Image (cartoon, rainbow, N blue to C red):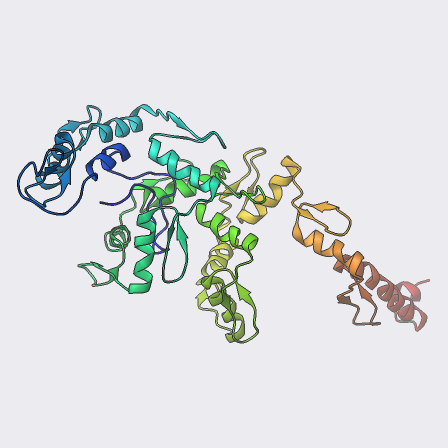
Length: 400
């Protein structure tokens, strides 16, 4: 039986970060899994254990055996009066009913986020504590849930037990296959009520909604920075750990994630596989093409919740939001001055380092920033004007 928690699909599909998926409570599962799988066909092996006649699994209580038997019989005696959906366990019905009522009785004491089920809160708390008790013996990577480890292990084993009957493509996870099938059916049943964009999965819709709400529920316990997606937080955490296991054999640059190395390698090879069908411009990564396309469509999907201003890039919205929040996250380690954007910090650092990377092609003088060069270039422009005037080439000079 799968351990409850959000779907983890190893990047084959966008995980459902907000929805906790299960078919029985943790309490039910814990009770049902007490005992052993040692076999036996009698209903009661000894004074304390009850045995399943179908699979031999044993339980300390008769009601646990009764619940377990529904796996074999498919019985779902608990029905939702609102939508008619049925469940094997009463607790599952109770949890489902909260979808209709909107009740979220389990609240995180750290960030205040609320959940419909206790197990969802339990899982969420590990984001704050950083607890990852399940470790891969092959590569040492750790996970919050046991089922996440099981999914990860398929990377090492290469196992892909779920096959598409339409095209024959195989997947490591059932959910990945379900997502893939939407390619053939074209089905996108989950629609954003704000902008009308549709998605193949509810989890992807939930992630998309954070673009409009600005919600960043995943907070780094090391520096306090918040993120829209849990996966982004995990990537960020590697910067604190200093872990950069993926190294470029051409220049020696190291990266926290393999996709970053793959993208970096394209700068050496010059590969730009993503081409704009409108103007023919090519890009090394798909997200760059997606951003570029907005110059043609005029789409600005990232809106400021404070003033309503819209942007074509999320990065531009993030920078804009600092006008309202006053946040200056980029601090000079030499003098302590802070800035809203990293590029401004980089320019400021040249005051301390003396670096002047911008050079005038006319006289060779160097500057710390382009604005200074632009101001300097006016000197040469005036010099040329005076030269023209002196030799009679200026129409203004001729007319005087």
